[in-house]
Structures are given as C-alpha cells and as structure tokens.
Image (cartoon, rainbow, N blue to C red; front, side):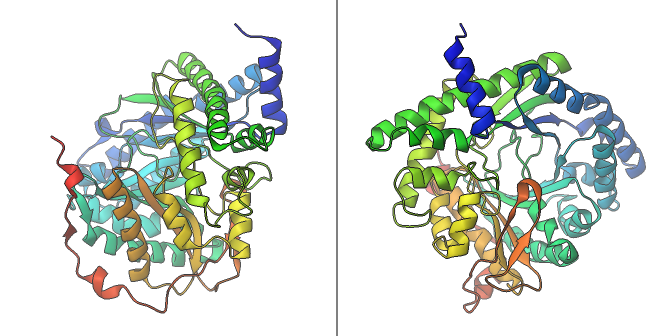
Length: 452
C-alpha cells in the first residue's frame, strides 16, 4: 500500500536526484525478414519495425505524463544483422540505411543490432557486416553496432580481435569531422547478453521472443544522496543503504515496464539494474564512490568501493523484480559520467585503473577517448585484455574506445547529450603489442568453461 512518505520520497528522487528510466527498449526478431533478395529483406525489415514500434515513443510519453517519471530514451534492438546478411548477400550497408529510415519513421533514439557474433569464428555474413561497420556508422545517425569476439565457453577469437582494432580506427577516421562519433556507437563484447536494453551493445538474441520490452533504469544521484545521509556509517551500513535504494529504483523500472507492456500488447522482458550515469552534475557513479570516502575516483580503494556498489545494487534490485537481466550493476563510461570526466582530466583516473575496475563492474572500458595516432594493433590489444577479463571471470566485458583523430593526450572531444565529453587519455603507445595481435588464432576457453 502506498503512503505519503513513499510518494514524497519518489518525487524528491525525480526532481532533485536525477532519477529516471534511462530507456524502454523494444527487442524484435527479424529472422522472418531474411530473404535471398536483399531488397525484399529490407522491405520486410522496414515494415516490421514500423508496425511493431509504431506506438513505442508515444506510449513512453504517455507513461511519463501519467506517472511523472522521466523516460529518457525509447529504443529498438533487432536480431544481429549479420544473420540476415548471410541469407541475402550483397552490401550490408543497405540494411543500415533501412534501419536508419525505420528509426526516423517511428522516432526512436537508437536502433541496436547492426551486429555480429563471432566468438568462435566467422560464418557467412559476419565478415561482410564487420567490414561494413565504418561506412554504416558514418552514413547513419541512429544505428548502433556491436561485435561479440569471445565467451567463457568458446575462448577468444583473436582473428576477430585483430580485425576490430582496424574497424574501430577506420570508423574514427570516417567520422573525424564529427568528433569521431561513429566509435561512440560501436562496442566490442565478450559474453554479450542477448537482452541488453542499453546502447551501443543492444541486440535481440535468437532465444528471445518475437517481440519483447526491456527496461533500463538509472539513479546514481539517488544512491549518492542516500549515502550522504550516513556520513559515518561503516561499509556494512553503506551496502544496506545501497540495497534499499536499488530496490526502490528497480520497483519503478518494473512499474514502467509492466505498464508499457500492457499498453503496447508486447510481453515484458527484463529490468536491467545498471546504474547508468550522465554528464549532469549529481548523476555520477564516480561521485557515489567518493561519497563512500574516496578523495577522488581512481585513487587506491576505488576497485573495492566499486565492487561493494555493484554487488549491493544487484542484491537490492533482484528483490524488486522477478525478471532481471541485461548487464545489471554499475556502469563506468568515462565521457558519460561527470565524476569520471573530472578524475580523467586531473589524471587521477588512468586506463590501467579503469581496467582493474572492470573486473568488478557491469561492463568494461566504456566511452574512453584515446590519442588519434593509436595504432590499430594497440586498440586490438586493449580489446584482448578486456575480453580476457570477461572470459576468465564468466562475466560480460566490453570495449568502447574513441580514437580522437587529429587530437593528442590532454585535448578533448565533445559528443553532446548522454554521450558527453572527455579528455584524450594516456596510453602506452611507445610499446607495441603488434606481434602478439598478428599471431591470430584463438585463445582457448578457460577451465571455468567445463561445467557440464
């Protein structure tokens, strides 16, 4: 039963602490749109997206007005397009153009799924799609791309890792006139989840229903505000506060997802518990860690504080929803988090510390701007390191780095909106990993994979 205190607390969270639903994402299967004729396949895709997602945006806006809960993005995720490219042949960029046209028709912020799953090798369509990514992202505004290069069960496809270093760099070069924004819409995964509502990594897995609604929540500002009321509590109390706060945030996500599902007549899938920060002041995961007692995010103790936060968010969230999925935890995207931006600018947060933090958080090296002269092999080595963390620890990890073409360490790129801005961070570009990357082949799956 609702009471006045709960209502007032929620109002405060929304008005003063940046509480919002980050996204409602409609996932849809395009397997029935596969066709040996590329033009027919594109026509089927456009028809299905515009039919199923026709009322997605207006429904989200109606729920915002009804409940007073901000829903920042409305998105669509589709079957990995490489699967359709295998059936049709031809230029995969035509699929990207079709998705872009559909996104403009239905008014969504992003469509994810210009993707390939190559963790154990390349199949028909995968190579063509991966090679087309730079052109596809340069030509479109709303399309997001992802490639899964490894898993705990399969190991790491190092041929794909080597290829993605070149693709990331080429994407940056093709969009250099737009602050290399193409790379902000491209992520390389290990253990990619098939029900993720967040971009740029969202795609609709083959085991999912024909159409489903997934919700991504936010709320770093709410967690920080709750911790500020307990300045002297021990870390057990800190964990309990985070759990209780995550429960409240997730209940709101469950409410919005259930209501959107009812109004659209589409099954409700999962709530992703991830604390998704923004560049806005007061909406930062880094500031939560600092509220725990760190002078600055990136100093010694940061990884332990993040581990506590991530675990407590999951424990609180799973009690609030019967169906939790996606990534679920705490995000650390540098350019999208005001506190991370500050720490990176001051030099307190390095890419080495970020890599250590990814061992205990939800995703990986996310939205990191790197020098424009970074070799493709170094980008591949960064991907390999991060994928290895995911593979060995049976967790999702990812890399979304932006080579700042024409910019050096200390300069900045600005993307605007939720993508934010950030400084070019230092890398060890004076030492090469090229020979290691050029070996190719596969890094075998770890012993943890043998669980059957």
